[in-house]
Image 1 (cartoon, rainbow, N blue to C red):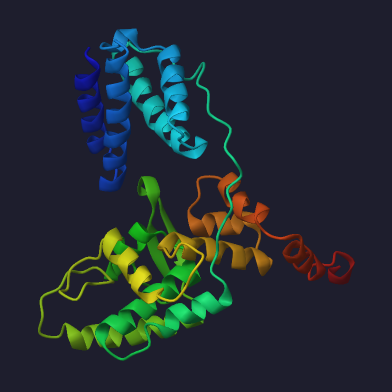
Image 2 (image 1 turned 180 degrees about the horizontal axis):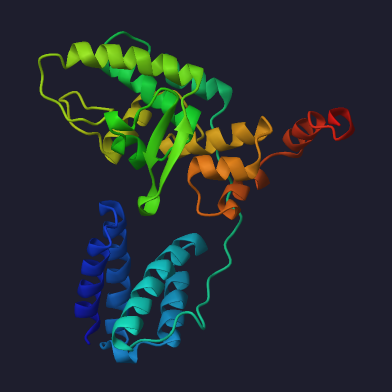
Length: 296
């Protein structure tokens, strides 16, 4: 089978598996890069795909100055694609036997400082719909650590008295608690939302645009950028809020397993990257409050 047509079939399979639009776009872009490379070196058919082809592609991306984390993201997509054609048609190769990943540098986790957080909330001080909604969005990010798309996808039916049902990656559901600060922000937003959309048509999503439609990733990222004016030296994004939530919970002594469950990580190894980024002073401060003998 020709590589371009096999990629088209695999992407169709991904749609059948109900991958998110964002994941589909990423897979399409990643496989387009891989396909163009294969064709450039004369590998046109899936029967010609070998581990050597993948290694050549990896070396090519390294030569172009790409970071290990980026290349591993490409390789993850390529492995999934080759696994599909191997299992479906017996072509390509068995990725379970041999597939090499690049060693990644330990990531530096950036988080908002208390001053940054105060600045964000100060910048959405006001009584109109957008100010109150954005305050609630920020509060939910900092209090729950949910992802941007997860926030956009919350329906009114997902909201309960003391928890929210989150539809996470790979269609996995989890729950996050509604803390007192979040409850206060939500009550204020719900009153404002009800009054604002009293005579207007709107979707049944919890967070709505000015026109009553579901928010998307770009819209929420723009909210962060707008409210983050005046903050420098850090990426102002929903994911930085997520990092901040995780590190603050760690500093307060919450265990890694619980945080992993709350954040919807597939395994605690991902959560442990936040732990490694804590300073020695923070680790010592956590340990001081957890005496073994004192709590016997």
